[in-house]
Length: 467
Image (tube, rainbow, N blue to C red):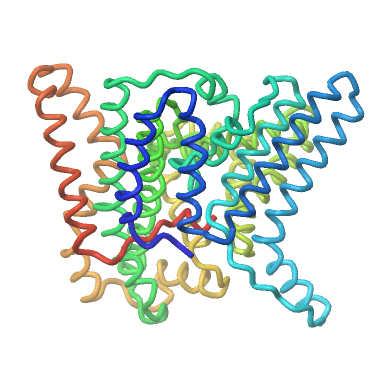
């Protein structure tokens, strides 16, 4: 089941926050645990058992690791148990159909495909929970002996189903002691509304255009319409995911937590390596800390570095979905990053910034085609349409949608490339008093426009809920 709207969130959030603020401090983590389970249970009433099992696995492994603190072999075995059990749960629910289908295809067998529904956010909370036992094994954090505190960490509803991936060490101190005051709540509300506006007003509107174009017969698309569609998706996925991340960070502030930043104007990146330092930052950090560096990182020579990068990027693609297009998508970015490390990065440094940004954005947009179509023949057909394989350059369809969505594309580009952020910063430094009044007024207007859109629209997908 996928959340089709934000209706439940707007009902759930005020009630849960009011309860959270009213209870004594010592009960706040218990409220976080319960509200997290309720929030997840609304979307996945059956698979709440999977999440609770994941919590129990790593909580118990943490206690066992602490008990056998003086026994390196026992601690290693406990870590292996934690990782294997977590990955087994992830593998059963997310990847079993993929492996069975490919085994049947390769060997001509007829193994039954269970076609299990994917639990919402399982990739996020599994990685989040595993970071605890790995860091505990490395002796980077102390053991968490309170089941309520650990359960609250894993099930915290703001970032439970779509990130950011919050490592235990990121919020360890705040799980014990945190400050909840009006400035923090005010900042949280502002960040939440900003994310809501990006998600509802920009991502949903541009996503509707992409959904329309994607459903058309590719052989009938003009090159201009094909480009218009994938550019709409490029903005949609940015505002959808970064919007939800902003909402999660904002809700975190309201609860007294400071979640890590997940996006930093990625379409301003000047290389693919730079792009992945700005896009889904917490996932990149997770793979760097728990896969790339343990494999040896960039130590051991060029050959081993290339091997490690390929492993990481194949896994990154596979994390996004159990399909060959995701694996190839990850491999595509891995190869580009390898080329930048070998020679392309030095060449990029010799050209103007504008062209470096243009190269990166074009490479990312082409990658989104591979990301969005799970049938590889459609990937090649759509790429062909973009470069004129259908024999159509510009048609009346492009003219119609281009005019209809021109203003939305302009607003989206201004936000995506950071022009709005720079303008607000300059206005705030030049007219601080006026901006102190204008900023909350704009937030209220943005909130009202978002609510009006939600009331009037039934199109409200969350792209990253499926991961």
